[in-house]
Picture (cartoon, rainbow, N blue to C red):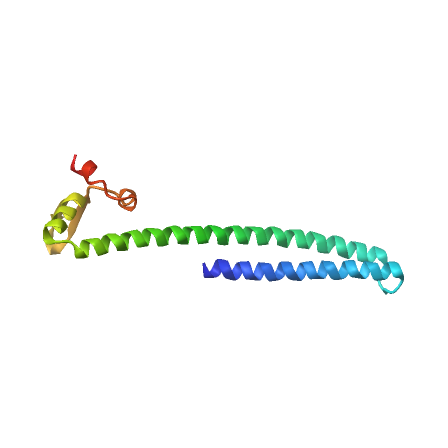
Length: 142
């Protein structure tokens, strides 16, 4: 997220600079029409066209960076919600009685195989998606 935010700020600064350059060139056109500018109208027209093209290109980069940042924010919000859910499950487990803890573990774990050197293989009754949506103890027990 820091990289996305840094990129967004850099592209936003580039866009602001490009917009300011375009506004300055347009102001110079007004001076040219009044005869107060030392630049020709043809030169200003080509500079404005180049500046508008650059401004549109930077605007597209800004939109892409903003979209990436917003998507990152949505992912972070989702991960924070999942983290909060897992922490609440952990708190509930910590405060439960021994019998309740045994029942929870029995519902979550199907089988545990212990191998040499204390290597374990654990088969769970549920996957992470089911866990994140909430445990339906009736469905697991069935």
